[in-house]
Image (tube, rainbow, N blue to C red; front, side):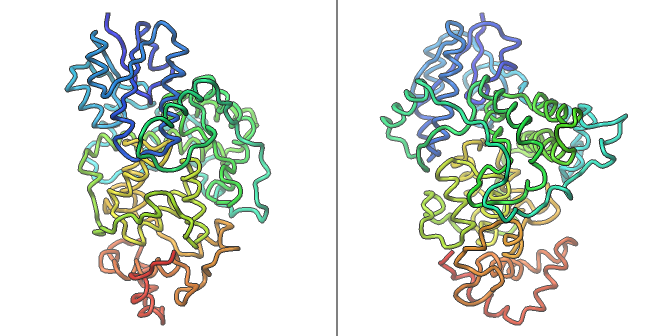
Length: 482
């Protein structure tokens, strides 16, 4: 009888629903040391695999081998697998002669996305998201969007409160067990090129834990999620965010069960529409969108480099050692990645991504860094997020403008500038904010390329009003203090 090969991101029951027989799980030493992964990312992978093996009992065979090919040969019986989360894994399955089935991990099948994409050359998420809502009947009233609008972002852009933390119930946190202890001991014994630090597990990695985390978020935190969704607080890294990206990306939750739970809270009057719509947009919109575009756009997409950015990632960034960084926003974000392998989406996009864009970091190297340094980073997750949305290196395939900002935005949407060594109002001088000065320096460098973008025309015209542009132009390419 054919057994089912499951990867470490295919841990939920929907992967086994059609295959009640034997399951093969693999721990590959070569895969663990292939890249400088975050230590806590590797812990989650091994913990998830071993917890599932324990849950399945005699139904599961866990093989520890040097490579996946070695494990398959040792197993020695016919296998079937679901479409994995990377082109490299898909190629491996082809080489091993393993039959590959469509994945049950996402709501929309690949063929339906291909039909939607048609002959498009640009792929706006808003168009896809609305079609997803219609296709699955989410937040609709008689075919129309609940509340009369598809998009409630305008209600979800409040700056942070003057307090150091949001007044919301705490997230659900896991309790580590003997399996986690064994994983930690095994990782300690391995000579792996990891980054970041070890620490207590923050994220659900079993089905039981994932359901508990979902319940706590929907009941306690979803009602507060929307208003400050785009804000950042130094001492409150989780704010009202769900912390569900890990169990979702490890296949422990299905996206439709997640959005249905959120919609039930809205229908019951337990959560406001703006918060629920913002969360549904993340799960049924953006997450599905980046999965399908990873396969649809092909391997060449990650090599796009519209602005010819070639600067290497600095060592303090690449190795997660930001102790000498003076910019409070950058330092805090990198400390979050170092300590937990996670920061929320605004820190990724408007702090880390914004900094990388302004400083001309190589987008392919940046993409790899996000994949390896984040506990929810997988090869399919990052190209559209990093190469497309964050760095605009695709020239507008998925976004109409670069996600670029100066210090004024960060001063409004974070509490970092209050105690920062830099002054967000200054473009020049010793205290010049690297984001404020970097914003104008980047616009100046790429003005000719940006003038054709109607959404960037006004910022480019703003260069003419700067009396200190020559000083900004001379100083910023040589800045070495951030």
